[in-house]
Length: 112
Length: 114
Image 1 (tube, rainbow over the protein chains, first blue to last red):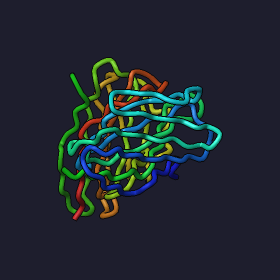
Image 2 (image 1 turned 60 degrees about the vertical axis):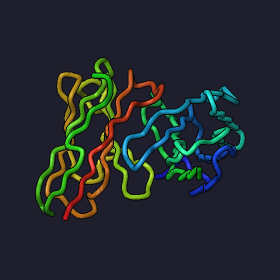
Image 3 (image 1 turned 120 degrees about the horizontal axis):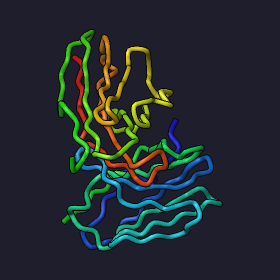
């Protein structure tokens, strides 16, 4: 079953604009991660935020986590055409936290 | 190696044939995972290895699916008597240990059953 659900399913923006994607989940987590996937192949790990953290930055990426609402958001600032990809959130929960449960992803298109 | 390597990158097989997919994780990564991704969908967990043992096989969809890992390195995922619904991209990932700090994924094997 899907733990994380991303919103929106698809997002189209102009280059230079900011892109915001949201993720909701159902059960308590140890951490939440965001991944990027190009062309339906391998995923690239972008950022991990732990359950006791509220915000994290990495370059043009900003992730927030609200455990009371069981939601997270990924903000990409000053988007570029090369940011075009699908973005997935994944949650780690339970003993050992080894299994990541992925959502269906947000497909981002950045128009030059 | 520098990254997670999967082979073949593409596989077309006839319904009813067996296929074997291979994953070479990053050297030193004790944890290895297999996921399946159907077209336009998220990732579906199949199996997790810690070393050479598989404490969690709960995601394997049927007894036609099996996986093994040897030498705390290479893993193979075998699908017997393939069906059309097995068509998907099969992704392998590895990480430093059972505590998840971010997976490194391979590029996947795109399996098409005709």
